[in-house]
Length: 249
Length: 278
Image (cartoon, rainbow over all chains, first blue to last red; front, side, top):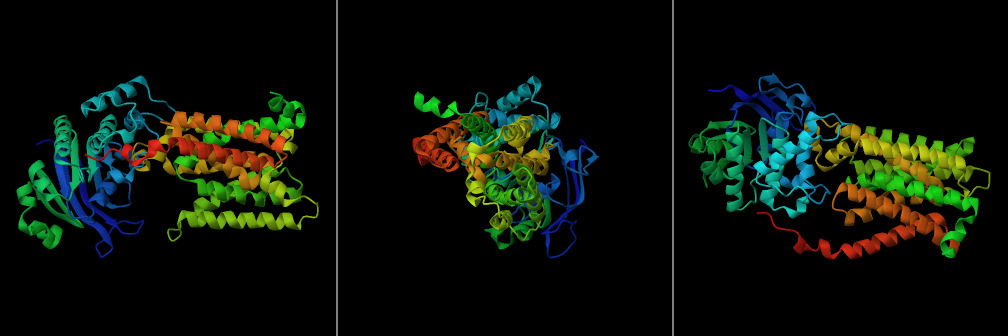
């Protein structure tokens, strides 16, 4: 068994607080601990408001949290320790009319390798181009984001994460509202990336999809309610704890 | 042809032309980011609020541009400070600061016993621009363009997706603070030509017209500059021939260009151009 690429220990986030989390009613998330290995494709299930996005943001250091996050064995103190992580937010978070081309979007992933005054070098452009080809979007560099379909847009964000050379990619509800052929297309790309060693955590509230597409699922609702194969995680007890009566229907 | 060249025979008109061109270049370069980041309200409050600095500097016998710059920096600092209060939205803080500083300016100028009209500051007096003003504007404006150019990639990353920008090492809050200061610079260099009320026009309107047409950021910036210079010079010419207020006429020309651009690009923005997800 390989060493974990991502280790999360006692992660906690408090609502409306700049301090670490403690048990209590105001906890958005508490006592979340798990490990993810290189190349793993993990589904993160839970109802809306269960804390999936909060957990991803905490792992990336985008919200204040308590607990420990280690990436590739390195203890993360601040955001600069977490550049090996890529977070792809829900797609309605972005202004798609922003005048940025697909090529420029992907090139943004290369910023971690440059200082603020440096322009992207030829190597950066080559890496961005390579990332676009890996997600089957070669030739779309000069397209604007509004010209892409929902599935293509998700792949463009994935290409940005690839250009960033992130070891761990966190996708937040990327599959919501996406039709079945597009879902299949996205999973083809997920599987290729995970075969290349990228660990991926995909948040979804679609239990049927989680059952079909993942080998491991984390069930989240305030804390970690289950961690295992879809059969284990989607067992009645864990579903009750995660979704309440909704999960059984 | 004479219609175009005759106004610029006089030296005061040549100075006015130079001042307008400087604003026409600098304002859209900064305004591009103001429009993209939906900060036009801040630009409005900043342009009104600098009247406080203008009035106080005039009363003290100091160049009003220095007073305006001081007020702009103070508004920017207070905005950043007050915005940390989570009970107040940034829009609220902007409105409070803008009107408070504007009120200070009006009270101070109305108390002056120099016969100077409040409207001179509100709508500008481009025909009274001095060579000293032009050199100061050139220095401030040149610095602003250099800063935007150096930070172009950082501004793009922070403006499009601040979450990812933070993840890859961009200091998003610092970029925002620098942009607010640049905004103050644009307001200052627009003061003489278009006044505190109309300064936001040159900051926002050319960039907004460019936003409707451009496919990428460089295009938007360049088109904004073309619009800014064209509208500034066009407005100056029209005001000369109509004997109207230069600042207000420039504002009207800019608004007319925006209206035409909006109408031309309307078919492109119709719903059938948006492809569904899937």
